[in-house]
Length: 264
Image (cartoon, helix red, strand yellow):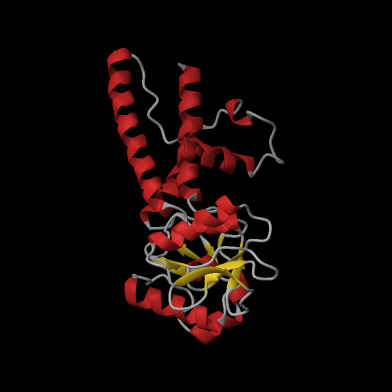
């Protein structure tokens, strides 16, 4: 099983009982999961179609807790080069070679890659021997795109990532030289998007920029403080949003700041 990505929320609905058991053992042995709601695997298995796995204070399983949200099918944790196959019937020779090279870079031997008649699935046929072979029922079929997403040339990705980091560092140094005494917007724009999403939850109640017309700083301070207390108690989730309390703190601060500036 692959390592869990803390940036993802996993939907466990398509896992088999054996796969669920492996997830359960993995968390038990490798992570702090004091906040896990389902410690009893049999109880958890009965409700698995509504259970999500997410990273908060260590990994935890929560029943229907973060829906609606963007989730990743947890089945991907069990996709390995040994147990998947790719339908090559509509792929080019170059695409097939791309995948074969992934196998080769991971220590597999490349066998025949010709597509003849029904022999059209690329897989690990036997003893780490990568071939375009017939459809094997014991393997999970995925697309070329999914294959490259999961197993693609990570060395090139790392090289590209390192190159980007070097360029960013050089550009940042140059930017400091060119923008001396000028404001640099060093912000987390993903978080700004979160704030916009948070505000959109109540758009059916209020007209756009309604918050600019209010004059209720005292109420906003109380609301901000309530969210701060939740965060201080270790609670971040609110209104079906993973970091809803943090988002509300920031929005309330923005509202207060706007009203105070308007008065000035």
